[in-house]
Structures are given as structure tokens and as C-alpha cells.
Length: 52
Image 1 (tube, rainbow, N blue to C red):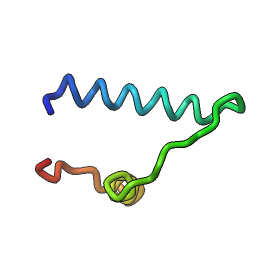
Image 2: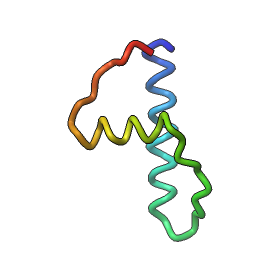
Image 3: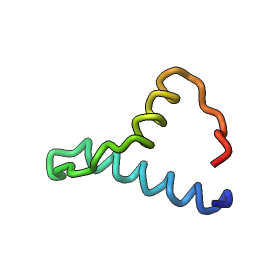
Image 4: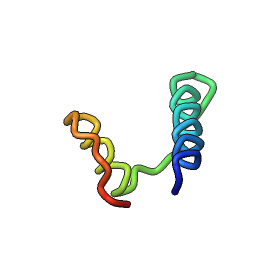
């Protein structure tokens, strides 16, 4: 993906997070292996490009 595509996906994820924080929205998003790895990286403070 290029920079613009990454930013669009990130914007979508941020909006989903905002929706999940409301009581009117029911979350049905699955936590897959890729997202679990990303969460681990963010929580450890190690945000790097893995060459994807």
C-alpha cells in the first residue's frame, strides 16, 4: 500500500474505535493474528515497518 492508502485505512480504524466507545454500537470485529501482532507492537512502543 502507498502512504495515502495507509492513511485511509488508519482513518477508518480510528472511526471504528470511536464507534466502539459508544453505547449505541455493538462490536463484532474479530481479533485476527495480524491485529494481535500490531497491538503487541504498539503496546511495547516498538512501531516499525516490518516490510509488508
